[in-house]
Length: 211
Image (cartoon, rainbow, N blue to C red):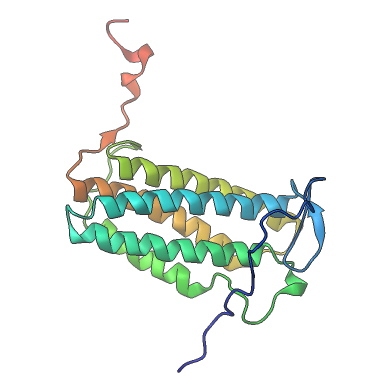
């Protein structure tokens, strides 16, 4: 059997509260105590938030899978991305000097896979002539929530990279994932037969002919 790329988790969550964080501090993977509002904590905390929303979108895709096998396949993609986000959180929770050779992380393989999936989904879509509003379908709306949280994670990572070492693959991954989530949101509407809601500037109250 081939050797695995990353180490398996070595944790035992048999006790959930420890009281160690009651004063507003937590530990990085290397054992360093930092404030809970530290920028590095904010980064992987936002990645964790994104993972939760990805789980919500995956459940919706699974529930809609009766419409087409494409959504069943898509739910498996979302599950894979959730694993990748945990790998991303692992490397962000670790200072560079504490990273082990086989520690879970993001590599170019994950980025290239997203690019292939973006291209494949985009081939089924009509070119956009305007921006779209989230909400054509529930799955579309949830994927847009994921996209915006992903962009927030990206902004935080850019800030962190100005102060500390951040793997370049991490930044590339969240950038590519937010692109994927946008394309997937449009693709979901197409698969579900739901029309897209295109942005119309004059649909605002100030553009109405009958105020």
